[in-house]
Image (cartoon, rainbow, N blue to C red; front, top):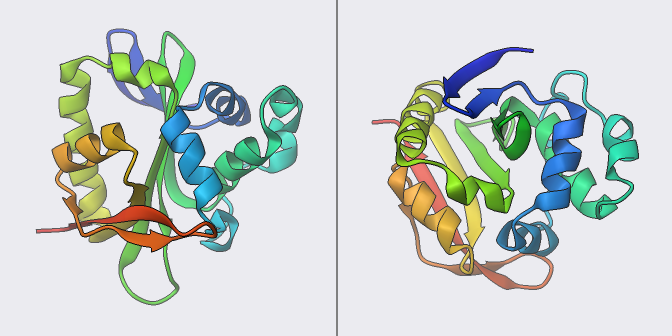
Length: 185
């Protein structure tokens, strides 16, 4: 397993199946609500990521909401790149970039986290901005939708240079989401 970043007790590294289960168990309520509100099927994005499949994480997910765990695993599998942020060795955030369509240059950037991510030091947040900039060099247009209730994610996205557009209704329940976009400059 590769560690891509280290700062004190925080690391960013490759995702393992158990990381999906840990984040599913501790998922922030705003992220949980977004999963239930969305209809996107991450498994349709592109080729599976690494060696993850739903069965790998299923045993660990028995105590978590299986639909949440499945959505997380499918997000990881559908990603071109994917990372796990850990604090003291425990998964607190998963994030990645998935292909939106076969044609065009838009990619879906996503992140799902536990409440522990809110304890991230400012230095770590500053490094997040750098990571997003590097991802944007590879993926020239990164997009997604964020629930209007997900204030912390919206702050983080703005901090990382995303534009937040006017809210619109999407998903099976017609909930309000903000489209977000970051174009390579």
